[in-house]
Length: 313
Image (cartoon, rainbow, N blue to C red; front, side, top):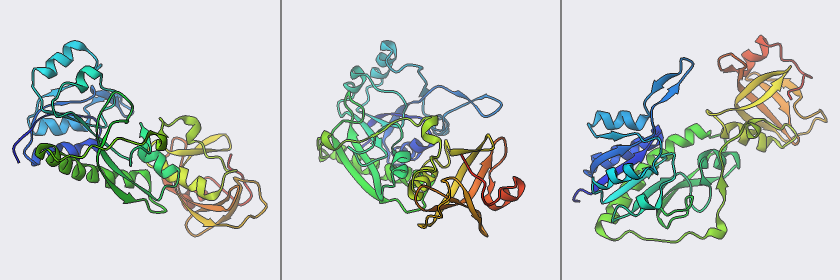
């Protein structure tokens, strides 16, 4: 397959396999556009986005505009004469002047089965909502938020205890594979183009501190899905004696109701701490007390004197 002159736009490590796949498939990646370096960690040291590091390893020029809508910047991209622009988790909406630039279109890899879970956090929300299936979709970008015509999609199963972090690793490789098939179809002129059914659209908004707090009055399944859906980032939490406890890993331990208040510790098991919810119980397996490292829940129970009858808020 002949090269296509390609501009790649992406930022986190989710986008890295897609960039590497374009390079290995022989496409001429003339430029990588990514977000500016940002302070990271407790030291707030400037860190390069993973996509920038990958581009540098392959000696590909990198641009890091603060705002993609800058006319001078778009003129700079136009001078590169891209045939196609590939966008994977870039982090900014593209203006129409940029969408219209490449003759073969701007192609996006999205981590959901569109039109479901349009928006910023599709993997998190698919897990939080207890979906049994999700996937990746490639589409021709338009001016809307993930509303463009679908090219290809591929599904994957979400297992009962799978976390967002684990699913993320699956989907980023699946996305690269689907992108390779999409690029082949575009180059050969056989790429399908299927409009989305907007009536079936659902949304995956940004996560908020309010979303992250566990509501023990909800069922064990809802609590468990929230905790695995926010693992490893940003993390679900509750309060214990006024301090924040992050809840990292759980499993549903039973459907029985003990009559205790939701949030009450009803038993200590060999592996963790069993807590009553609004319907059924969950076993906390991994916790992270405020200002402490993550630890298994049984050790945490010993260290923080968690005992039967005490209540998480």
